[in-house]
Amino acid sequence: MLTVGDLVRLPDLEVRIVAGRTGLGREVRWAHVTELADPVPWLRGGELVLTVGHGLGATGEERRGYVERLHAAGCAGLGVAVDTWIDRIPEEVAAAADEVGLPLLRVEGTTPFIAVVEAVADHHAATRLRAQQRVLAAQDAMARAALRAGAPGVLRELAAATGGEAVLFAPNGAVRATSGTGGRPWHASARAEGADTSRPRGMTVLEDAGATVLAQSLSFGGTALGRLALRTPPPVSTHTRMLANHAASLLAVDLRGARAARRGLHRQQARVLGLLLDDGAAPRLAADAAHLLPLPAPPLEVAVYPAARPDALLDTAADAVPDLLGEGGAADRVAMCVLPGALVVVLPDTGERPRPGERLLAELRSRPADPGAADPPDAAGACAARTAADLRGAVRRAERAAATGPGYRHVDDADPLARLRRTIAPGDAEEFVVQVLGRLREHDARNGAELVGTLRRFLENDANIEATARAMGVHRNTLRARLRTAERVSGRPLGAHHRLELMLALALDTAPPPGG
Image 1 (tube, rainbow, N blue to C red):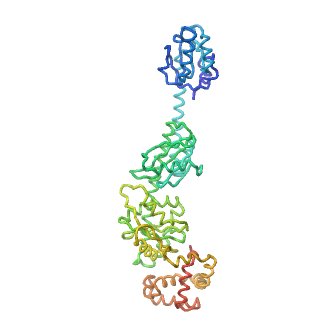
Image 2: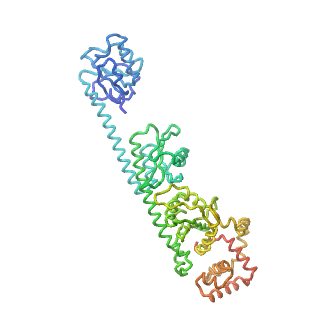
Image 3: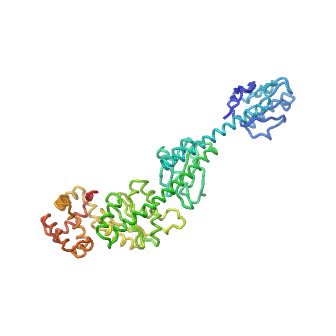
């Protein structure tokens, strides 16, 4: 900003302050030479009016009126050259300038008006050049930050360059990243604006407690990727808008790349999960798949979403999971695969209500429709699981739950055993499990055996030798030998009473699986 005081102090100009010193802080937007008696209709405000005195007027009243009109028009000041038309500045002009606080300058004969105009123009040109250089430097810094740190880095550089705060929202309104300022009340208004589908896409401007919020929609190829919000002190300059647009472009590219990579990863992992769920897969192959698949930490929620195009729904679910569970962490360990007519998603059972599977159904139904996206499912079934070995059975039970009608249905919500499990104190449950399974676990750990797992599969198959052997991929005689070993280790035959205790102990078991 160039003030009248700055102009007076320029060493190359012979300009002296005569009156109106209280207005030396006025900003000089331009310098304008005029000899009109009333130049106001030709002014916009912020001008330093330069005159040789021809239009000042012949009477004291006219001269005072001249100064007062310039002041009312918002002029920065009045510069008068002497020894051209007049040999001194009239006293009425100086007195009026002092009264209204309009700086009155004496421009000496050694300083032509063009020198004053050029000085003002050069200052503003240099200011614009510095601003453009700062914009270019900030754009370069944001581009480097995008490569080094992704979205959080871009937001930090945008906030630093504009003196504001920045936040990136997911399509569902969840905060994906911030410039590091933490949660702020203004997030709510920016989030609500982004969720209002009646608003036009692009950049919109909001007011928040004396600050300005720029909200920019992010999309790529018609696909909604999220929303950028920047809160900055007013007034918002063109350069601030340019930086916000540049940040939006970088974020859109980053989000699109991350989305494509996430979709590709889930498609690769879907093949591995498909092996675990394939009844015809060789046991050794299924075991290898279980080691390769990064499942969430137990307990698990296995959710099944019936869909006409489950393959396309997998991409939508892959996009939605980070918005649901947050970037990284649990979201990176969610597994998906496509079955005929349904999508299977293995999620962490966080214990929160509504469950992740139910929230994912709501997310799939509420996400903005992308070009070519699958129709959202109207139903979901879910079942709890602990290990990879439990997934097949959990999927079958979840499929049956999903087939009962629209909405979300979890097997445990209608399972009496699950209700019983929730009523038993954790300490009592753990003591019971140790009494029933303790010796079997010690034997497995000592000998590398799988007696507990064998008993679980045996009970899941209604104590049927043939069905259990087929499900485990072992010979029935091998299975019988394991069951006899289990009876010997536990010290009790596998009668109805003992099987009931085993079933309850396995249902109450909360210990992590071996190696988990």
